[in-house]
Length: 152
Image (tube, rainbow, N blue to C red; front, side, top):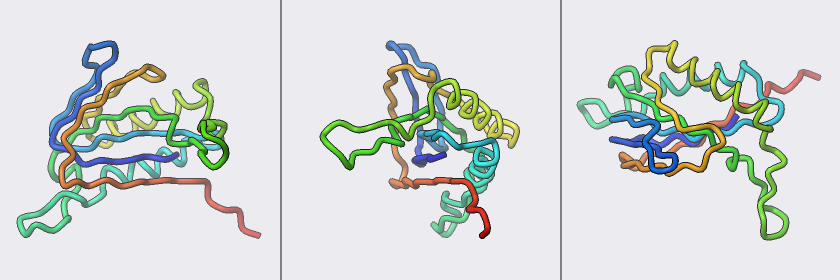
């Protein structure tokens, strides 16, 4: 799984002009799933995201987590994170998991965030979406969890 995380002061996502999710202070997550991703990767990423200390404390240092600031998450599925642009002029998306694999794992990931006490709003899986956000900082991180390498 690959996630682009942007810290924001507010964000919303619209599908066909209708808001499907909106948050105040927190994270916008663009979430991509590849073929061999499992629940294990989703669990690691959910724990990492909820506990990342990237909000300022009273001294202006990144020392507070999403939970510390009672932040929210806007989670948007994003298969294009697995685009390969090395050949030609058109991206290849062969590394993106097909919808029947990606959507259940994306939904599972969002539920893991909710179980950890975070309000999660979403877009619509597979839909054409418009995402509006006010990036706070800006702070943008790329998180990727791949399967653990097998020992030789």
